[in-house]
Length: 150
Image 1 (cartoon, one colour):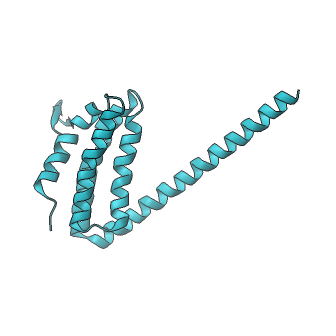
Image 2 (tube, helix red, strand yellow):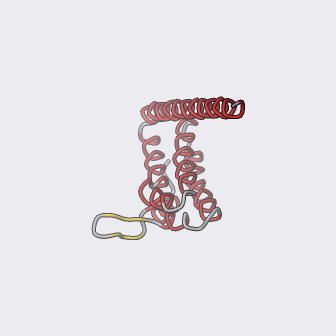
Image 3 (spheres, helix red, strand yellow):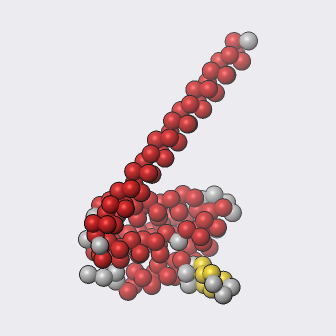
């Protein structure tokens, strides 16, 4: 099985359709990020078509989770004014996801191992971030309590 042409074309339109100079290309995904909420939701919805093509092609769940992580991360960062569109222009989640699907179809075991590494790293980063937030909240609560008690 191969990645359907319409998925490759969609990925190209979202990430690489517009030439920017002689060596760089951008797609409409970054421009969608300029539209608050609706643009990022639309971009993620279109990215879901690429992800579903991976599911349909028989990609393993770690690989699908990795693709979701790419697209969701791009969409979340896309909500940040100015930084979001730039991240969408640079990250190119859809092109990455098509490459991941093609790699999975060519050598599923290697791609699966790589996807596990990415997922474990993402979980570790999430755990560290949650710990940092909890510590910051605890420090803030102690500081406020001391301030209130005089």
